[in-house]
Length: 163
Image (tube, rainbow, N blue to C red; front, side, top):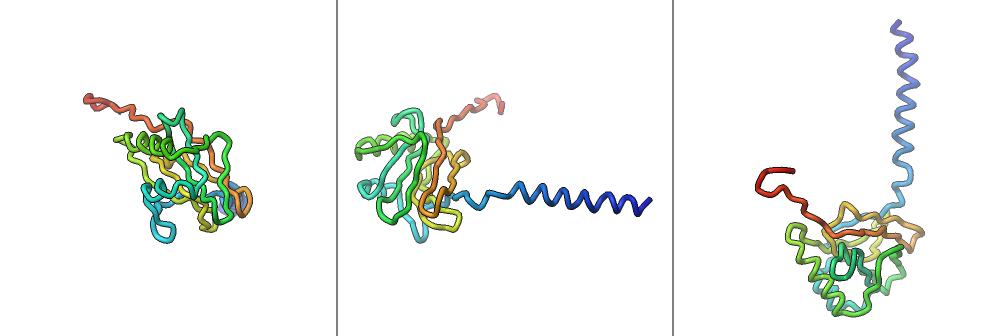
């Protein structure tokens, strides 16, 4: 009886390992967000001051209700592409977007650097919605960034202690 259990458990173990391994396939093409410090460190004010060095896009309902703003450096040969991000062509609009992002008291935004799977720098993103950001490498010089349609919401529970 013990011999049969072992014969049954070994193939089951191999099946389990193969399922887990196939679940991880394809993850090598995804980029990451890291706080903008170190080698590509910057502040949001520095990026705003040098706004003409970037192709700038925002995500959200409108520029007065943004969920994120993305900065794609014009130099360096790397590109950020997306399906629904809206271009920003004026510094005044960029400042309005950043002011709106800063107004989300319960969700303070952070300047993130967008890195490829091998740690290559692709650009910056200013947002608090980091859980919603999906960045996937299309080719060695191009990263696709998914839409972040809604700004963060605080559904709160009020003073009643609800969740």
